[in-house]
Length: 116
Image (cartoon, rainbow, N blue to C red):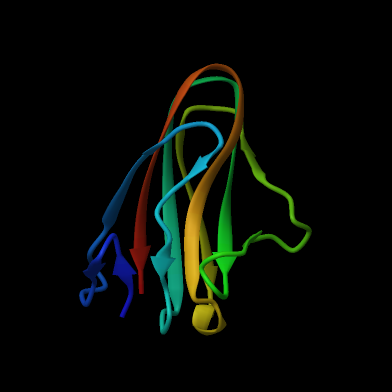
């Protein structure tokens, strides 16, 4: 069962609020051992030109890697909600959301997560 911000989630319908990120920061790490799917929802407002976000995964909770086949980030060019997820995470121990950078504007990036 996943642990998010010190709370163990047993109900697959629960959604955890990870708060608002600032540029160059990341959310609390989530212990995802035994999960099948982890979905992060990024709610982005006040976007200028773009906002760059990504998911980061870790085996040990210290060293994180970008979750993409080529190491690239995800660039958002319009305000709204973006969901990034990964499946079959039984080999992964921790996951977190990352607000990498912005170009223009004063964006707000709020993050929620659901694990199944």
